[in-house]
Amino acid sequence: MQAWKDYQSANKDRFLEELLELLRIPSISARSEHKKDMVACAEKVKERLLQAGAGKAEIYSTDGHPVVYAEKITDPSKPTVLVYGHYDVQPADPLELWHSGPFEPVIKDGKIFARGACDDKGQFYMHVKALETMVQTNTLPTNIKFCIEGEEEVGSPNLAKFVASHKDLLKADVILISDTAMISMDTPSIDIGVRGLSYIEVEVTGPNRDLHSGVYGGAVANPITMLAKMIASCHDENNHITIPGFYDNVVESTAAERKLMAEAPYNEAEYKKDLGIKSLWGEKGYTTNERTGIRPTLELNGIWGGYTGEGAKTVLPSKAFAKISARLVPNQSAKKITEKLLNYFTSIAPEGVTVKASEHHGGEPYMTPIDSKAYKAAAKAIKATFGKDPIPVRGGGSIPICSLFEKELGVKIVFMGFGLDSDNLHSPNEKYDIVNFYKGIETIPYFHQYFADMK
Ligand SMILES: [Zn+2]
Image (tube, rainbow, N blue to C red):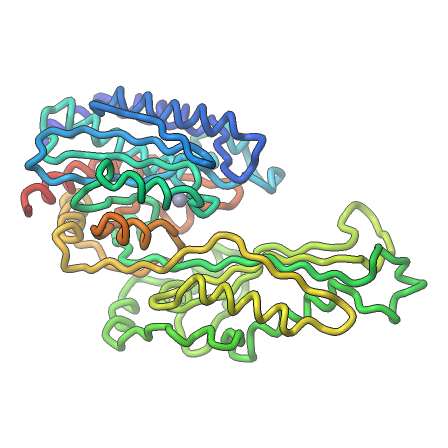
């Protein structure tokens, strides 16, 4: 569509400037000291949606951070697309590993470096600019609704209540999410599933105070040693997870699906080089793509205890802690796996220490069918702008609200992600390639067009 292209190329510098402005707001949902920034960011998103042509935009407060809702209803008889995204970001630590300030976006080598550049400000903002494009060129073929929340990075604890109490407001024919990655710009792909998540925290307590390791060491169980042993017992020699019942409900992928996955380009040498590692690790019997897509995993996210300051301090600590999470695949249940993890850690507590295990947020795995109209519209849109059919892939990450949306709103989700796995999501130096940002803005109007045509 020439009108879209002309409008976008005439305004592309402004589109980028606007994104940079959004990235300057440190909307870290996990940190209470950023509560004001969260509100400021929600206000900014609302303002931008109105400027882009939304007929209505509102901020809904929740028990946590606010949700921004907006809509452009052109004709109730036309199909409605609900865009979901999130304006909150992960904490930026460790700050010393950033080459530039996480909330002072810089552009280098055609990439935007900032926390939230890709996850998810850069990605949801493509939809705002796609809306503007279609409104300004008088070509919007659908009704669009936006639900941009502020708690995705902390597990969306208040979104379920919001969705359940605003079903009519959010009513749509499809939910469109840009919060995932593509294989590469040369090999476009569409995620057809995301993994679920269970997350627990373990606290191991030994003596009632930190002890002199020379006076007591050797006679008292060290909580860090005990915790390390418990953690080490979670995988066997084949790197299978040993938690009883962990794999009970895992749907094994068919040979056909595994064959299709194997066709995605993958260069092991490059993969290792990029990460700076000499060899890979993982569950025996599965390839790297399978380990990060169709198989459940268990990871340590943090471990601490004792003395971690500068220099040496000979201490036998009173406590040790770990944060542990599992990525889940269909048909594992986050609730059941969380229970199994909690039980496992409390049941294997060695004598001499006490173990407390508690639950953080979780989410169910989600799969979307590739024969739906919405999926076909997304595939066709990507073909229109990338010149190639996208490969359907299973993503390794988690978007906890997916199963909730489907349950409450009764519609399927389509993932149209334009990020790359190398975007350093949740890591220092998060980036988003400017060309991906523009490509997304260019592709999204095609989705609306094709989806409307197919109805
Ligand atoms: Zn995200």
